[in-house]
Structure formats: C-alpha cells, structure tokens
Amino acid sequence: MSRHDAPLEVDPRQASALASAGRPLLDVRSAAERAGGMALGALAVDDPLDWAARTPSAEGVLLLCAMGQRSLRIASALRERGIAAQSVAGGMAAWVGLGLPLAGDAAVVEGLTRYARQISLPEIGATGQARLLQARVALVGVGGLGAPAALYLAAAGVGRITLIDDDVVDRSNLQRQVLYSDSDVGQRKVDVAKRRLRALNPGIDVVAIAQRLDAHNGPGFLAGHDVLVDGADNFPARFAVSDASRRLAKPMVYGAVERFAGQVAVFDPRRVESPCYRCLFPEPPAPGEVPSCAEAGVLGVVPGLIGMLQACETLKLLLGIGTPLVGRLLLVDALAMHWRELVLARDVECPGCGSSGTDSLRRASALEPGFR
Image (cartoon, rainbow, N blue to C red; front, side):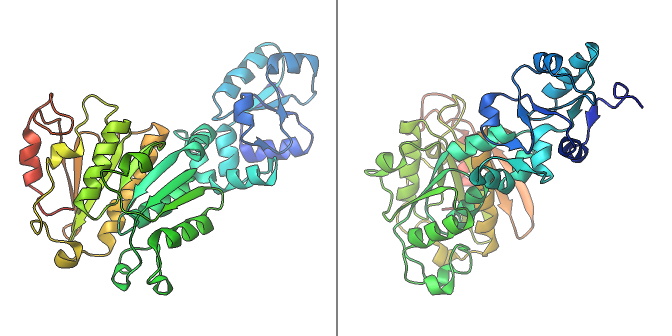
C-alpha cells in the first residue's frame, strides 16, 4: 500500500508511534486550544496546507485537531493536492483519553491526565474542561447533600468551590455526610471539607465561609458565582438562596431528602420559562410543620443519590450541555427504586417571579409536603 492509499484516518496509538519515528505530527487546533496542552512531538501549525507545501515529507503528515473532524477535512484537502496525509482519529480528546504522551509543563500534563476521561467526551473536550476550570460554584450547606456534590464537583475540576455552612461535624452526621470521619467530630464542616477537597484535587480553589446563609448576607456571599447549589437543611437558607438566585440571575440547583426519598430541580432565572423555588414553596412552613431530618430520619445513601444528581445538573449548566431539570421536578423513591417527574411551570401568583404561567405548582408542591 502506497502512502497515498493509506487510510485517511489513523489510530492515535499508531499515530504516536509514527510521530516517535519521525513522521510530522501537525496540531491544527487554534492557539487557544493548544495552550491547554499538546501531544508530545506535535508541531503547532496554523496553516497546514502551506506548511505541507513548503515542508514536503516523503512519508506524509499526520494531522491532529480537537475531535478529529477538522483534521479529517484538512487531510482530504491535502490529498487532493497530492500530499500524503492522515487524520488522527478522535483528535486530541482520544489522544488524552488513551493516556498517550503529552508535552508541556508538569501542571498542564497533570491536568490533561487527571481529566482525561472527561476530555475524551465529545460534548466536553479540552474546551469544556477549560470552562470548568474557570467556573465558580457556591455550595450552601456541606451536609448530606453538599458533601457528595462537593466531592464530584471538585473531582470534575470546577475551578472554585465556595462552601457556606456554620455547622460543626456531629457523630450523627457520619452515616450520610461522606466528607467527614470520626476524628473530625467537633470541627467546623467547611474547614474539614476544604482540606478533603484540596487533597482530592490540589488544582482547584476552595473557599470556606463558616457562616449561616440568610436573607441579609446571601447576595454578598453568592455574587460572582456561576451556579448556586442548594444543600441547605433549613428553609430560611433555602429561601435566601432562591431570592439571591433571582437577584443575581444565577441558576439554583435544588435538592431535598426525607426518609427514603428525594427530589431535584433546577431554577434558572435566565430562562423566561423557568419557575423559581417560591413557585414550589411560596412561603416557609410554620415551625414544626415539616419534621427535621433528626425527627423523620433518612437512609444514608439517599442524600448521596440526590447530591450526585445535583452535581450532575451543575456540571451540565456550566458546560452548556444536555437538558437541565428546568421546569421539571425529579422525584426519587429509593425504597421502591422508582423515578418520576412533575412538570413545573411558573406560578402566576408566585411571590418570587410571578406574573406569568399557571398556578399548577401549588397543587404539585402539595404532593411532597415533607421535603426540606
């Protein structure tokens, strides 16, 4: 088989071997993309057609882009000009995902390796990972919901995570709050959580605020973040998150649990069709109306399920992928392992967002009176 008859695409492993043997490997991505790291031995080339014409190679050239599509088109164009060329299948995402050699400083290489399984997803890639590293998420409450959410957001590479909680670790927390261990009892949750998250991922910034969020400090604490994650265990804090969400025009990822069940939704004031938390619960319940976790009890894995769903919704919002739970309330019954959805629309009489939609949420919220 001549070099012109070779397949138009080449497996990344084979491409790495050919590059090591001297075959030119041209990185045809933009300068911004290449700044996030390059394949070992690759040459940064902005105009591969001109480069190949001026620098002929008897063996031809290998072309590498982000996902393998641009390089495939360029390889075809080079072949039409009589220049042997092959595109690296899957691009840089596949290269990183397979753990092939990388060039750059230690921090860049470590980052590409750490997030390789995410970067290899076409929906994320190096561009999406860079977006996560620039993102800021505020997490209100570092308990049963906040602990698993924080772990997965940190592992995913969210660049700054702000933890807001005034509580200390109690031994009764350990059955479900997976950030903490027995030796942490009596310490402030945000301090312990910050240490654990930084140990998991030293490349991110974690800010600890050992205060209870309320209507007065909420806007100040939450300003400057891209997504607000509600892991609160009390209604005043939850309403404060909701009000700040609307005021700051930032999405709120809501979660709640009770006994063997939980629920998740996204309230996004940037979307005209999105309800807000007050559409679901117009006013805080009267004291004693809703039992606390200590009174009602909770199966330890249920907050884990809901917290991970909140982390997933948060990552989707940050990346701009998938269909977030806007206008939908996801209900999880872990005892029966049954999942269902309620469709949520804006309540025309909502004290928060008001003036459009229907008042069907009053009836929907009545279906789940115990969640907090």
